[in-house]
Length: 207
Image (tube, rainbow, N blue to C red; front, side, top):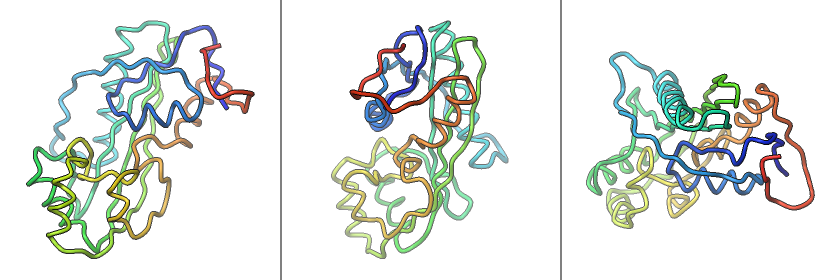
């Protein structure tokens, strides 16, 4: 299974997330990573969708400027509870507090993707999934934070890792919670004229 991207080299991933790279590899993409440095602070009055889409677009544009004529993909994820946007925790104490806050409750995970085509056209979208946590106490939240797993993840948990033990249910796109909604990715690629197909083998070589 792969996307036929033409003679433009590997897809450039504007993200340092190993989860995003793993999902792209699973789909058969060859990937080149170029991590942008973007201020991820939210703007006054900015909602979750606006926030993640703005950041994804900014990351994609910054990296595309360094790779003209290439396919460039960026993403951004945020967890929302009580109207508050939870990004990556600063340390284990903040991670434990975030996880404890989500215990026994539902929250939303919004992931935006931004895709720059070789002609420079930028397309983006947002996928939102509801996640409900099991009910647990602060001791488990602190123990999970101490593993170090949540420190580089929005909302301070990784559903594809040990954080799976915190989750009661998922309603929506599981891959949006991991950080790269597959359905949205395919929609953006198809809108940009890339053809996605099932093929022999698993790797894409850009054409």
